[in-house]
Length: 160
Image (cartoon, rainbow, N blue to C red; front, side, top):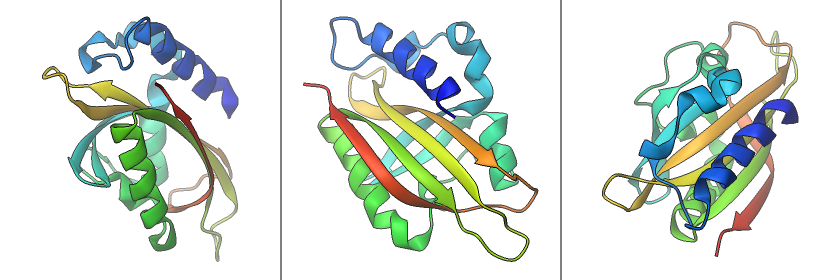
């Protein structure tokens, strides 16, 4: 799973250069073309919540539908949503980058799936940190049933 997340994080780090957080408009899809199916962009909507502006096909296939406009929390189990809200606020406010290790709910006809999600802050054209570049990679028996994920670990990296 790391094969995709690390190059995207490296690209984002290179974009930062001497600034703390790069702008969304600086993202060049051609530079991360190998990972586009795993990439998404989030927009902060209220404290602790963000929605998908765009998302790659890998994520849409896991959810079973187009996710643009949906909140990121729709991917997460009810018990993990408070953790997600806290992580989002830290990423936006600190700002920080975060890696989340997750597992999908397991049940009848829902085999185990592991996932890794990276969240990296971006500035909007107005200069506020209200966007996130994300990368989501899941590994396991993926099927056509929508899945929700439980957050297992979070690794925050403050950018100051």
